[in-house]
Length: 482
Figure (cartoon, rainbow, N blue to C red):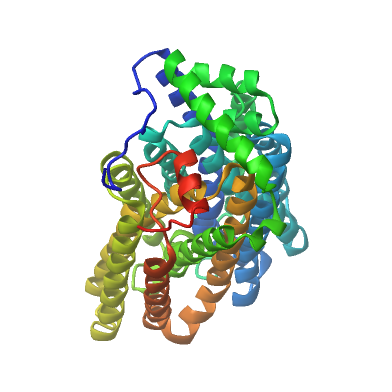
């Protein structure tokens, strides 16, 4: 069997039935966490300029508004994984929905920066927690044959949330033109309306998760085998549920003997190797600079020559490119092409896009609409390439690398690094743009992407085509071959 072809090994085949519909409902509800993740990271794309005008933000404090959420997300990712291990995946998602709502309310009513920064930090805790817990929850409930597609739907929800934020921003800005330094006569509180929309999916996540089952693999870890089998029967046929249950029980018993579960397990060589691979993937996904577009897209388009009034509308095109890429990856690539191959292909395509953006800014400076439209197309192509090959694959891969007793811890540690890298990029972009425009910004991303493409090639094992239990046995035996 090739790594790119999914098979369930000795497990009975999947069959159609009400259990498949139940699994699909669970995925839809859980990915409201991804939708919130996407909306909260994308909404500043249109809200930042009017907020900057109202609060009198400098380029440094503008970066702080962005990075405060991302630093909160880093801590939320680490603590979210541990909470999910201790209290359960479902219960943690319910709590995160409450934090999402509280952070949104505080942001909307913030009278100034002194309240806005802590509010964005609190919101970041929920974003980071959801970025870890949702992929773990989906990967542990999904069958091997559909794990990539079902787990990857969280990334689709993220980019759908970002697209929704871009679209909402564009619609609201067209109805109530915002007050900016260039046009101080607009509506100064428009950014509050943009942020307030986030409360809707937070309520949906809270209500929906109250009716969803817990992860069967988490139940096994707690010794609640009857509960685990009952959940598997909801999302599998009877024969398949019992076969999976036997496999999970056997691996859980082996882990108990090895006493896996936290920082002390970094003394185990194969665990260190997995964490190193996860950290490389996490940083590699961020240093491409994709979130420079998703967070600062409107600003970058204006630097590229798009007018201030047209930039929010043009930015919707970039968001749509991300959604299209994610859909194509989910339905045509993620369970057909090895994860490592997808990631490395994506790094190469992204570098080509970076080089093209640099060339346009150097060869077509001040060419007006020609430069503006070319930059818009290239930014859209960059996001399309990244979403088609890398972003879905990154989150699916991270959720598959670690053994059961380390999954929350390992995923949380990797996501901590990912969010810290995201925060560094978010803080650096305004300064890079001020220092040297798009050429300097994307030249930096090009170099960083090349470095991490090499590291990924060197250290990342492939995770597709095997059950989570098969992967664990393979890694524990020291087999990291692609």
